[in-house]
Image 1 (cartoon, rainbow, N blue to C red):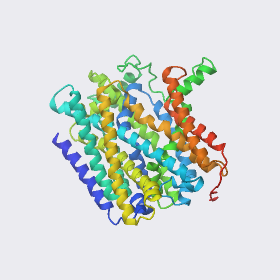
Image 2: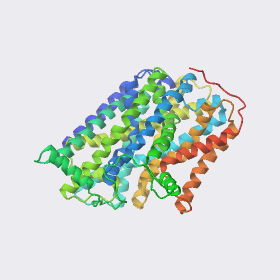
Image 3: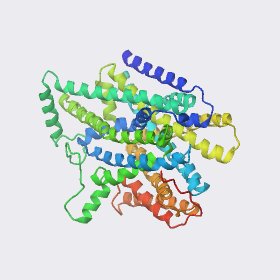
Image 4: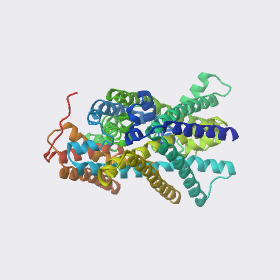
Length: 532
């Protein structure tokens, strides 16, 4: 365990060093929030990848591979690539044209101040809830590690809650320190380090698993064992629905008529239809209307540089997801060949494997990788929250005449304030999860955006696709209509009145309702975009 601790300590030393170095010569909000728009595309690319792979994805995606033993989840990568191409070629144009710091400034120029403030509030609330909830996942590994070190099967509810609280508080404090000191430059350059650690650790784990399965046999023997074990659909320890091992594409067609096919498509999470449509809308929302992601692209030297970073990240998304899924599938084979009973909860499968079966050193690297994913997502969220609150509310409402020094100080104080809020949300999530183990935290963490981001995307598309439609009053009504539509479908689905719509379709439905409602109202003013 000493080797593991040395690896983790080296990681934290590197993080703090980068944060302190990046924090030099910051004298304005633009330098704090956008790094003076001087970051190279490859660093922005690494930062996008590091921020996307949250602790929930780091633990949840191998869990999906373990349970499903196929690659249907990868289909969503089609939509993520299409969505990123649209964002890179279309969304960034008005943001760079108006040289915004907060992307919601564009909405004020296109529609009015009320639309900007409403969209800003939706983002702030959604991001606090989503990022705070995802903090919970970083503590799962440490709870399992505590039981491993103490030689116990499980910890008591009281001990578990305390471990979660201590873990997420420590992670948040460390992340807040380097984010507050270094701003977006610290976020991006630490993300580069975190992306490297993540890649090395996951690839090393896949190699370790393959070698362990191979044992004293040959490569072909190991591969035959993997194929046979995964193909055996009778082995389903997690008691899920019948498996389709190795499948990549799912058309969602039942052959029972148009009505049943439509039901299957709308209720299926991983079908080719949700990949092409649902995932495209999700990506446009998260990459084009979320200050968290767009802020990185605005830190590039120009629009083409930012566009290159986001499009290449989409190209890399599918192979990255496939590696994580393959890791989970290999863990399944490892457990089967070793006669090991997996944990009941899919989210605990990969962290349990890390703690109990990885060798020292590699285990420390995986723990550092988990901390890196949690801190990478958290640092960007903190920086985006502080930037949005400072630009849209501190300067826009409370202190429009503030000096650069006062504005920079406000941004740093708001970073600390949002960190405290995230600790509260993360602690509440951990407490509810421990008190009621039947609660499914993963759908909550990944689904929060689905309820609100359709409204945001609908308004942004209304501004970018039309010149004379939409106004402040109509936009507020439209955003509420989009949110209400998704919530109503979810409520009726939970009650069994209609089929339960799968999460990839929430943003699509919310966007369409918002856009159509907003388009009913005529614009009082408009800001036409340049042709180039």
